[in-house]
Image (cartoon, rainbow, N blue to C red):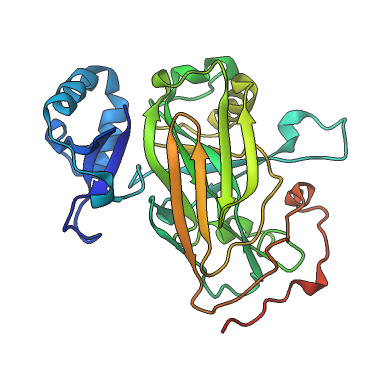
Length: 318
């Protein structure tokens, strides 16, 4: 089962999206299962999935599907209360505990866009380049606090994919130190989707593979094979700080390596095993250009040291 929010044919973004199931034949609206607006309805489905699943299965089996190329996908969570991003940093200090190598920050929920959407690069004072980082997005299924790493499956509803777009300085450190999270919270800087697959429908035996391509070039590839360590530890840490709620998103990168620039005309594609493919475009009204071979040093994410690339100044577009 794949849960999604989508605009049916003839509907634009000004109207409320429909809650639906994605099947091999296309998208099926299941708005009739839930009375609230679609964004809140999906949270309702997540919170009461065990009770609603039979009704969803029945509706999906007897309803006509709309071909996917006829609909526009919205972010599968239109109104997440929280998007918490966690980066696992490479360190040159082997004595540093693994939990101290996690860099976490809150990303604005309004940054989310859906499959087929467009990342728009703003004129952000001090941001001299914009980069991507691919993440596995874990969707919380019930209210929880102080969750042990080994118990993470009890609180996770499902998975989708996310790309964390970030504004950076010329040294490739995160934009405006002290306000670095804001450089990841611009409108459209959180591509999310294409849909949510419940955790119980994923086969964990072979792990979960994750890949990001830019214009067809493979830039990032990760594999989640130790889920208690890679997912459970992050949820354990987050839930000691805040209460997690149904529909909250925790985005976890599998590798910080391979982060590169995004610029006008780029096509980003993320493949998440057993889930699907998320595709978004990039538009820069200023037409700025950067060397596509630039890569972020994962150790620089710690904001202690970062490479000094004096040749980073963008070229003017045509």
